Amino acid sequence: MILLKLERIDEMDHQYHVCDDEHCNICNGGLAYCIVCYGAEGSLTTECCGRPMTEEEQDRVHMKQNLNFRDGEWKEESNLRWEREHADQLRNQ
Image (cartoon, rainbow, N blue to C red):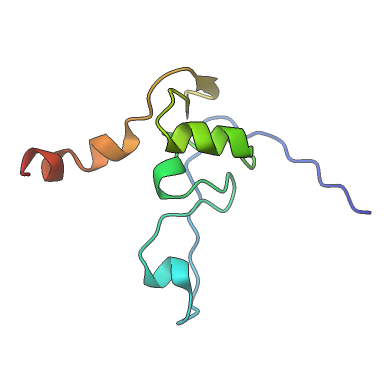
């Protein structure tokens, strides 16, 4: 059995999946997917936590249950990343 030790990296930008596979569902769909924390779309935090998120962390972030990672630590706060990135679109509805 091989065990991997994953260290957290402070204040890290998400490292998004990029490939040249013409049949890639992630690339073809224009989806944001971090290859480090495995956050995708609605489960992306403000900053990458530098390790794979647990299922509970992903669920709480995705369901907007006041969990976010920024400034190098987990915070009990709303993740407004999506709302900030789409503010103009939301205002025009």
